[in-house]
Image (cartoon, rainbow, N blue to C red; front, side, top):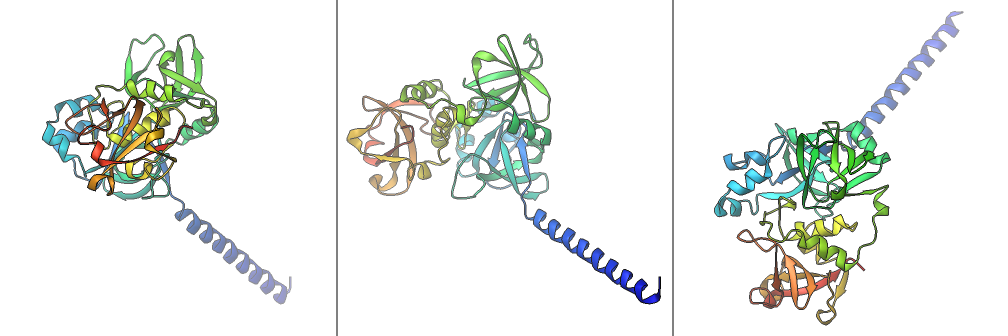
Length: 339
């Protein structure tokens, strides 16, 4: 090879290497802007407004596994009331989240399928890292396999088909990929603990979300009434405790209908319903300033002038007259999502 040809080859090689490096750098820059995702690895992960707000009494809610019964039962009324404004929401075992930020042992994430104008990916908040897993193989199963949808307020995952060893208590609306159905049991995959068993009568199995049967008002009222007597929990989204909009969101979601997470946003979507046309299953909203201000509460109409709702920290899921003092003067309209 003469000298001229040699330098041409060297020159072209330099251009090729530079081009590859440029393409690699471009691909990396694009990837850097693609948010990572993870999966909730506990029965219900509690989202906080900021990291490191935990009090000693809150520790059972921030471990892996969690003990939500211990957490809610040991808090005094004042300690529960303190949660108002300090918690955001909850996300259930196997729920997908987008990672927004990382700070020490905490991650700010957005819970998918909890619609909110606050974030395009879902409802945001801070959770301890130990309550999340990357769950890559689990995620592939979520995308490819049928899923079991829990339809009871809570149920147990078992280590064995004979139910001799309880693994974890999980909530209604939890969805896990199905590996097998065997008699009265269903084998499902968890995000990081392998295959576990569920009692078949406590779940419905679907090939896809689109296969969930369109609910009737009676279906949703039946679901809602399963929670009568359940104590209120600010930001609660599970059978271990609900706030008002967490309750309505979960009842609808379990029946295949995704509605916004917060009452103020629920009040802006769906189909408006005149007061004289209320039907069971409609959502009723209440607002400050005699119904003219900000929406702060939601209940589900059940007929005969009554609603089922999760009222406040001092109460439980219960049935009340929606026009009773304390509610009637704050009536702010109704929306229908089920028809």
